[in-house]
Image (cartoon, rainbow, N blue to C red):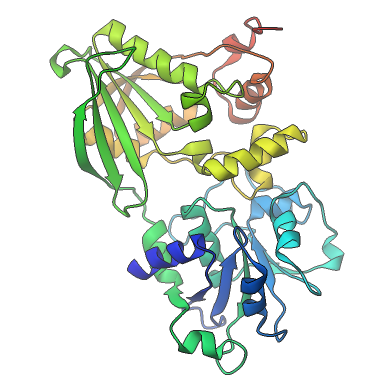
Length: 384
């Protein structure tokens, strides 16, 4: 697993990575992430013109390009293998450049399947895609088969290219449950709740950190304990973006806790429904071109919602909070906590204010993800 962690770091820095598979029919591949790809790295992959690179993309991206049927809404990778059914690999013709590969991986563009050499992505290519997802990079990689006796011999021989196996990648990314460990805690008085304490948790793989905000004295918490699972949203929580209602929900939940004598807010590192800040901003650009929030994420190669809530279950268990009133409009959060053994005794809706900027976002939540927001949609639009 340590090699996979280093491999993720190398991909984030724009370096090449060799990925091997135990599949007898597959050889090793040399690959790089499309995000941050340079002309120099692409030339190294080509091996002085000896090889044609392949672009591996997810099944969501393939559908957005008109190459494959639509995958099931909300489909996540298989937890045992990390494989998305329908991830594909395309051979690039001619002198493809990084800019063209970027457009193919992230723009609103359909292609004719007849003009492409398309096949199912190999296990090694899927390993590269998995690392990009874990690192919240754009889920697209370019690869070539490794020919140690040819154009890549020097790069592999001098140790400048790290070798990672698909088994090691899955050890990093394919755990059935996310384990969290307690890191630290301290008092943080808030404007909405002065008696608040922050508790920091870190996932076992060391990549993501989450925070539990405990409001009020534990012995005064109501039963069931009011709880909010809140996905981090830099644009909404910190800057008050009008595109979403996240900041209003965040502060509204704290006010609910203060009024009721306490509660727990789990602030989860799931920016953009776990696609990361950079990809969320790319999705915003696609939304300006007419896509809704779900289709924009899928056009970038992600599922409709990449979040999982194993970390939230682990945090609640550590805090010994097992019976809760959940402040949410999202049925998936209720389901995930119940599956994790948390008794969701009650649910309370939590609404923001409707405006012309977040109206498409709220509609997509209702129509595409089944969120309980019909009452919010029927309210007046601010500033209309």
